[in-house]
Length: 478
Image (cartoon, rainbow, N blue to C red; front, side):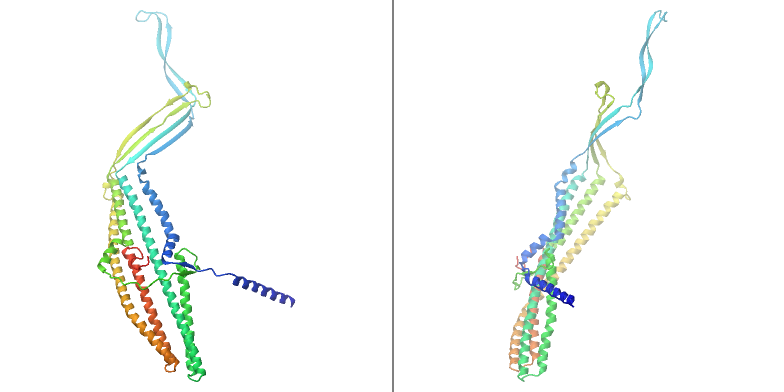
C-alpha cells in the first residue's frame, strides 16, 4: 500500500511539473506579414526556384564561354622506354691488302677495296616527348554560340514563368485566408446572436411568455453552429499550413495577415485587347515561343554540321632521345642521338552520309523539323487556350461585378429585416424560428457579398498573370 501511495505521489508530482512547464511557456507571437512581403518571401525561399536559379547560373556560364569552341585542343605527352633486345648494325667498310705481282695494268703495289661488317648494339633507352595542337572549324560553331544564348534566354523565361505562378498562388492564398477569416468572424457573430436569443428564450420561458419548445429550439440552433465553426477553423489551420509551405517556413508558423481593402474599383475590360495582350505577354506563351526559336536554332546547327565541310588544323612535334641512360650516367654527347620531327597540316573533310535519304543524319534532321512543327501546333493551342481563359475570366469578373451590386442591396435589406425581427421577437410578436431565418438570411447575404468581392479580386489576379502585367496593376495592391 505504501508503494501504491508513493507511485501516486510521483505521478501527481510529474503531472504538476508538466502542467507548470506548459503554462510557463509563452505562445510564439504571430508573424505579421503583408501581401507583398509574403510574395517576396515565397520567391526567396521556394526550393523549386532555388533549383532553377542554379540551372540558370549554369546556362549563363555556358553562354559567357560559348566562344571557347575556337580554342584549340592541346595535348602534351612524355614517354620513357627501353628496347627489349639490342639491334644489329651491318654494312660495308673500306679495307686494304698488299698483292705482290702485277695487275692487268702492269702495276704492282697495294690494292684498296670494301669488306662487309656486322656488329651488335646493346638495348637503348628512349625518352620521347609529344606536343600537339588541333582545331576543327565548322560553320555550325557560330550557330552553336547562338543556340547557347537562346538556351539561356529560355531558362530566364522559364524562371520568370515559375516565379509568376508562385506569386499568383501566394496572392490568391493570401486573399483566401482573409476570406476564411471573415467567414469565421460571421459565424462567430451568429453564435453570439444565438447565445443572446437563447438567453431571451430562457427569460421568456421562466416568465411564462414562451413554451419550453422555444428554449429547446434556441439551444439546438446555438449548438448546431459549433460544428460549423470548428470545421471552418480546421480549414483555416490547413490553409495557413499550406501558406507557410509556400513561404518556405514551418507548417505551424502563426501568421497575422495585414487586412486589405477589397472594395476595388471595377475596371473596363475590352476582351479583344486583353486577348491580344495575353497572346503576346502571357509567361506560358512566351516560354513556348522561345522554345520554338531554340529548336529552329538547333535544326540550323545540325544542318550546318551535316552539309558543310569541316576544316581541321593540326600541328605536332615529337622529339626523341636515345642512349644508355643508366649505363652511361655521364651523358656523353657522343652516346646520345636526338631525333626531332613534326608537322603542320590543313585537312578539309566533307561527310556524304547526309545525302543518303535513309541515313541517320537525314532522319535526325527530319525529326527536328517535326519537333518544330509540333511546337508551333502547341503554340497555337496555347494561344487558343489563353483566349478562352481570358474570355472566361472576363465573364467571371462581369458576373461578380453584377452580383456585388445586387448583393449590396440584399445585405441592406437583410440587416433591416433582421433588426426588425429581433425587436419583434423580444416583444413576443415573432417566433424564434423567424429570428433564426432572418439571421441566416443576413449572414448568407453578407457572406455572399464578401465572397463575390474576393472572387472579383482573385479574377483580377488571374487576369494579371494571363496578360503578363505586373501583379497589383489591376488589383491596386502593389
